Image (cartoon, rainbow, N blue to C red; front, side, top):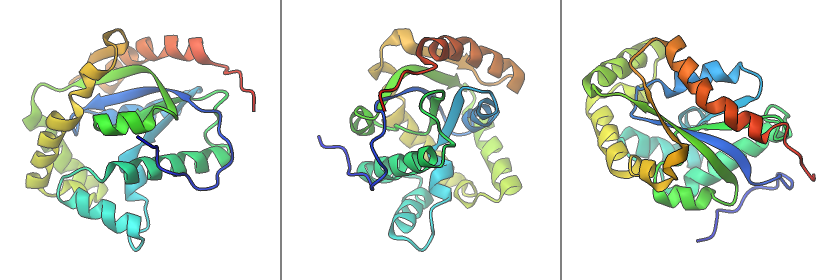
Length: 217
């Protein structure tokens, strides 16, 4: 399996150490990611945010939006290519600094194919799984978010329910794909401060073990 080609963004020091953030839609992945972005040493990257920032008139933007509108995953090679080019643009702009930033990946990878495509670029050091036992609560949360943040992709309940089915079918199996000693379950239905406390308990050992990172380039 050949990783998708990148645009000319230099020679990055791959693979980047990373922790994956998993959970059903609405479990609070983005909320915790945004909080952790303000903690020195972490760089949160959300595939959903990247996709929403794509030019709606571009071929990539139209393709992603078509799949998203149906509650489906965009093609794997396209997803990884968009992700990597965006990440390297952040590195070139010195917002992402590989010497000092642990990547927190939210929404990627979403299936086994994407795991394989990412392997040359990302070394998964941990996986945080936000457990949400009442999915109806999550669906209501997503509907409120759609109104508050004017997120068209969250507005349709039928599309949201399809996203849940896709998650259980394609993404949840990844929880068994990675070594179980790096998978950490966190109860999501608590205050953001409580969830953050547990997240840091699992993230800090990874951060201390890998950073500051010695780079040859």
